[in-house]
Length: 351
Image (cartoon, rainbow, N blue to C red):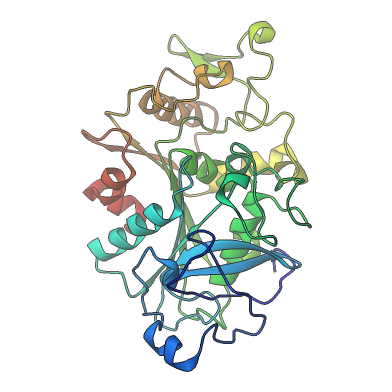
């Protein structure tokens, strides 16, 4: 196991008194309501609703939890599922919308029954998390930081939470036919996908599982050397005006707890050999919600350019890399248009 495990908990209800992720706890997967009510609210398979009926909570430490949407129960598993799709929301933390994107994409390729879609909700304090649900700062969950000191203990990295989802999907007792996991995110979620591809040990632990990472229109990328492109060439920038340009999460200096658990050479080797698909819309050239810090601006003026530069960087310094540039023509900063395009569907489900 990647993390210490506890019982996976799930519960759903038509009435939500706190938020869309309101749950009643049960430690032994006992039904949360009376028999007649349970029959009325029986969870369908696959579960294709953005209401609480398709939500559950997973343990990511001793008695601390993360709420997720899922098309197939992670606690019960499913023998027909062959693929997992973990899809991470953007800065608005709208996990319900991204869950819909995921199961719509699976339906578009005829794989809805055989694909378990999981959309985690990385909450902040403004989301009113339950007392035993971890939450992060608005930037911390994107960067894999530990959960807030004001939340429950033990604190966990948001990337460790993704590790736990991979752990559950890789459990042959739950999903005996599942052989491939796609981890993806758009915008802020795309930032997560690229850093997670570099720093997660999941592929080494679950060697029988094939993984890919679809990084869609993120504001910035992780650079695994100090060089940045300027005027068509790569060189080390003058750090006097941007001293933190190579700090985590733009680069490998000053790494956080999760990324700092491994040496730089290991992170580089992992990112080079992993199946990473840089999915970028060629019309994503506006500045809305764009990171314009000095470290970000050294990666390019806008998202489309930044994606292309990152691939050129990998080409120059790591020619054996497996990053693949995939351009979605005519699409800007839209997760639905990106994922549901023919190009996007192929990135998620093709070879």
